Image (cartoon, helix red, strand yellow):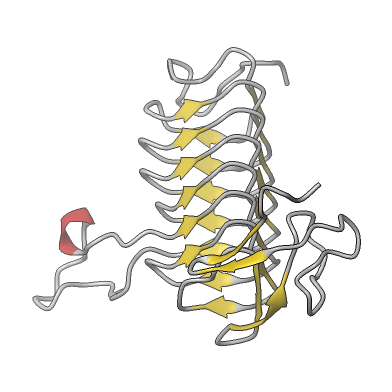
Length: 212
């Protein structure tokens, strides 16, 4: 494997940065844009119109569907399925996460013909900056995961998650708050590791400018 090498029909993909690293079993659509120093590993698939930023990692068997956008420094581990979602900078998806976009999934139309792209309305997931989604979690179409939120392993998320919230279960419920570093906050909304203290906001938590 060499830098800036693209295989499986994407040799002429002008949107692939020359410093990207792509495994020879990966499939990259010729309209995809891949940023500098991004690494895409074994058997990953990147669909048409996808935009992936700089310094990202896509693990083995990752699927990124049409029109998805991925920011910088995003880590997507093995076996994830990203269907049209928008991932902001510094997001992490643990192995086996699925981000869905079709609220009314059917194989065929009411007339009995196979559904095509024009037969349903996309409602993609949004994952805000710094959020982490745990292994085997599933996020329903149209849901927004807030900044630095943390979704527990195997959760099913059917509604929006506030900034810095910790959610778990099926269906997922909020069970606490987390710091930007990932540690649980205490009752005073202070991180035992970073010593940052957070303020409650309508969208979740935020760090006041007076914090060290």
